[in-house]
Amino acid sequence: MTHPEDGQVPPEGAGAAQQPDQQETLAVPLVSLRPALEAVLMVADQPLDRMTLATAVGHPVEEVDAALHALAAEYTEQGRGFELRHVAGGWRFYTREEYAFVVEAFVLEGQQARLTQAALETLAVVAYKQPISRARVSAIRGVNVDGVMRTLLSRGLVEEAGRDETTGAHLYRTTSYFLERIGVTSLDDLPELAPYLPDMDDFDDELAAVAGQSAPEPAPEPAAEPALEPASEAHEAEQQSAETTAAEAAHHSPHSGAGTEPDAGTEIG
Image (cartoon, rainbow, N blue to C red; front, top):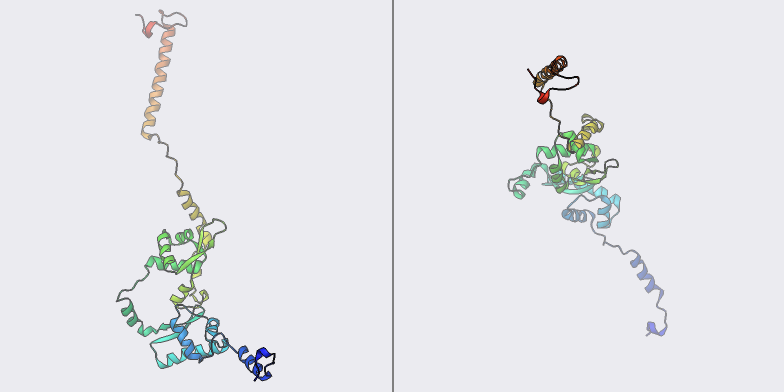
């Protein structure tokens, strides 16, 4: 009987048998593809792309892509209460539309948290004109949208997208959650609405005017009352006439010396 410590080399067959097993070891054990995809998608809280799913189940991307389309078609054919939908660049389970009211009644207890008309209008402007600042959204809608934008941010429908190079204002854009909620894959799938919105250059003058209104305006000078102007001119003419008459009388008075006025400004009779 030999032992490794005796310097004996183990048979070639033993080492050769272990090496292929080590090379074929996968990070995730190979399992049935469709059940594995269903298990992962069941716990996903956001759409998963095919590369992420392929890594999770340990199968090639092409096989995963084919299995996802096959599962989606199978669920539709069987009339399941849910469907596998490709949206926002990934795959996720959704309640089938005809059974949505049942889920809403159970989860929301008959109460639906909907966006207001103002929020929907603001969201539409951001979707079609992104990236866009709050001031430009306000210019398009004609009202202040600060409160509405905070609501859209808190719900994850819009997000910050840097700053404007000219004004330094924050810019906003829609999120992947927005695409998921409206059921489209990308912004290219949105209906053609942008041509009907006014061009941003049309609002430059309005934005400048709004900015100018924020600075305090000087108090206007009191305007002269038009009704008093004729009376004032008549009074001034009358006064000038009286002064002229007094000067002429003083010049011809026998009681006055040359270049002198009577004492106390009174005439001597």
